[in-house]
Length: 258
Image (cartoon, rainbow, N blue to C red; front, side, top):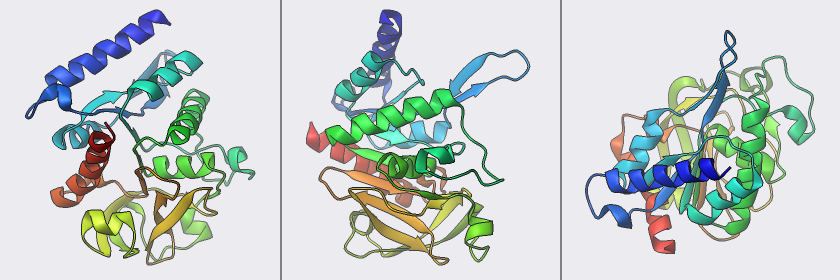
């Protein structure tokens, strides 16, 4: 365990020293959750993340650190204690048993290694009230950890009016929300890649955006602190202004807290 912690802090140090532009050591250190995958042929495990998340954090003044799915209590608490902000990334589906449902035939459940790590980390992080950004699955996971439920398959349970898989579509944003202030707009065209969505909203979360088919597209925290959760992928969008507005808001919230 000591070796893992040493590697973590070396990663954080290198991330801070390696950032370009500005005063590197003043950059908030922002953790990015990761995807856990086991090779079916040889049984070896890997942890990885789409580099777009890393670039979006770094380009907006943060020092990104990828978090491996280590579930040890000491490591989890060290993450929460030392990191300034957190990005929850996309991935496979949450086990429906986590929110009291039987699995739909389309569900592809994430490995238990990742599920156990993310649910513990999110719960600890939300308790602390530190800045957090949830993307796609990240939004769904925060909702489930907060006691909410999910629509397991949009095409069969909602419809196909709006294409949510690898498509751009419109979202309507509540004018009084933090997201509307961040984007300076009450609607946006966003890139989505998901088949599930929030159904019943969890504790201390508020719906702030919908797509034209009624699917919940964004949530924000209601109990203080920066907490924004979006169903789309701003880090993968060609619209740099949109991407930087959202990731920049996270970084600024971390800097302000410090």
